[in-house]
Length: 510
Image 1 (cartoon, rainbow, N blue to C red):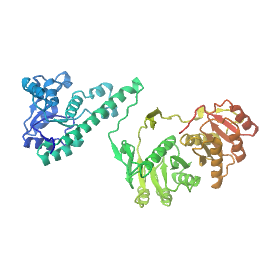
Image 2 (cartoon, one colour):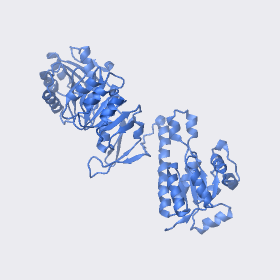
Image 3 (tube, helix red, strand yellow):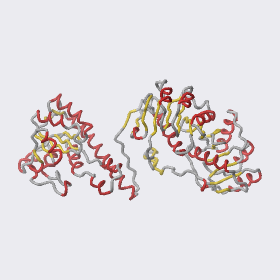
Image 4 (cartoon, rainbow, N blue to C red):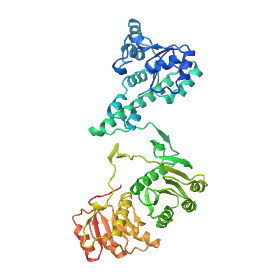
């Protein structure tokens, strides 16, 4: 074993004691001298195993309510000394500093404390000083010291100790050091981001300690990973593993349906991040049927999402459709029995969770960061620009269409009627093309556009769109406004009995 070293001494000081016992027992069997502090020292003593208090090394007690315990040259000298450096070894003898070969230290649960809603002082006290210093020191000196910085690595350590009787290779020590620096950098990132919620320093830091390798990325020749805590958002009840593309569609679906949280039963079908069907009705069964009617062709292989519990009747209808993922806040037992008959169909129960307030994407040799578009157009935002005001029913449809438009790739036009998505033109380079595509699609599926409404994600620089819409039977329009030629579109609407409202808010989605 190249550059292998045996463990003769260990410093153990951990917050979490779970899983520690077998490690300590093996070390004791190997005759390893163990140093410890506070609660960990008591834990080891209660096992009937001899342990040397750190205070015996430093000749200094734990002070300041435990804030200072291990921060001492005799502790850090024992960790940071270089075995091949004669001067270092001479100084160990001169200052009576013990050699430390193994450091087992974890960190105070800072993130968990923040998530619990604790007060600031409790959070500050969970900023680890001694632990993070010990981890960095031991990991830095991996050529001589093994650093174990998480209980997640106890099983690996136990296996090494058993198989090699306390002898550890250089590659093993370096691997544990890499894990240690990942933990320390993640920890510091969490602390910075906590402070930066109020200080707003223009720096972007992000760290995830949970990652999952996916089958591949967007295409089979691309490697893909998901970094995040999927279980905080969903309970996965059934089906195959989610792919990279599944996750993108699921993210789009969840963001879109958040606009209808707490409203009447609403069902959406998405394909390639865009809604191809969406309806709001008195029952989720009818909402599904009307969402499917919006585009039964594109629905094949889509992502289905509901804002209400899925029942047996709805599940029976869904079962007739090939779909990748079904998402709902809950499912009846009868619905699950039906939906799980197809082994690959992914069934997700969505939990209540907090969306990130930032959107991040790679760009060139860096990243773009922006605030999440948390603005939803509401009644109080509407300013009637035409002589004719929309009816109450039209206003409901306009706001309904606006919510869909916000989550559809720009340039986009959304057509809706009676809280049903009739069609949308998505991702077009021209808004006229988007509108023509939406009209053609709606007519292909036999929708009557008379008295329907139109939503646009940006203003109309010319009256061409409202003219095309009016000729198709559309009678009310919602758009942000702001063009220097707004009056051209307003004039056309006034001359042709079309109502138009402006929101003053643009919802581009690139």
